[in-house]
Amino acid sequence: MTEDTNDLATGLKQAMQNAPATVTVITAGATLSEANGLTATSVCSVSMDPPSILVCVNRDSNSHQLITESGRFCANYLSLDQKAIAESFASPGTGPEKFERANTRVREESGCIALEGCLANICCEVSQVIAAGTHSVFIGTVKHVSVSDNGVPLLYGLRGFGVFSAD
Ligand SMILES: Cc1cc2nc3c(=O)[nH]c(=O)nc-3n(C[C@H](O)[C@H](O)[C@H](O)COP(=O)(O)O)c2cc1C
Image (cartoon, rainbow, N blue to C red; front, side, top):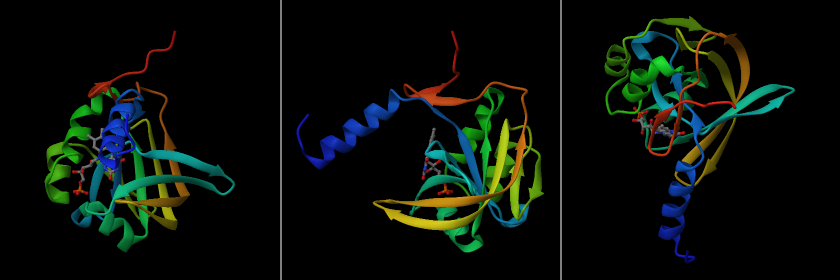
């Protein structure tokens, strides 16, 4: 591979296809009428003291503005049977359109909208924002966690949705 920036970007995209990642929907907005969200795999835990996670969000996305304005977000970790929700929140549309298409129940939690039926919901207050190329890295201090041990995590990799299989 050459050092050309475009080639490196293409190479990185291809490399990430070989690194399946857990699928989340990042929601923001305190009430359903003002909420929005996006499907995201660039999410990971940062620290346990204080408990915190990060998410990388494209600055051109609608959700970026809402996370910035509200100062909060919720990482909803999807299960295999929630693939349609991932597709809805990865497609263009307003917040209400996405929630209607996703056809999922929601609840208000710590100033965020949490999606029902997920393997985990982690609601956060934004503590730090780092500009990184086209994206912002939002670091959030965890304010509320819900965990379910029922279900199989939904992953994205090799250009499709799938599951992790432990030997
Ligand atoms: C599997 C998958 C993972 C994605 N991960 C991210 C991500 O980590 N960060 C991001 O900004 N966009 C990510 N996207 C793209 C957004 O979901 C997509 O651009 C969305 O339509 C943005 O919605 P909004 O502009 O209404 O906020 C991902 C899309 C898919 C299908």
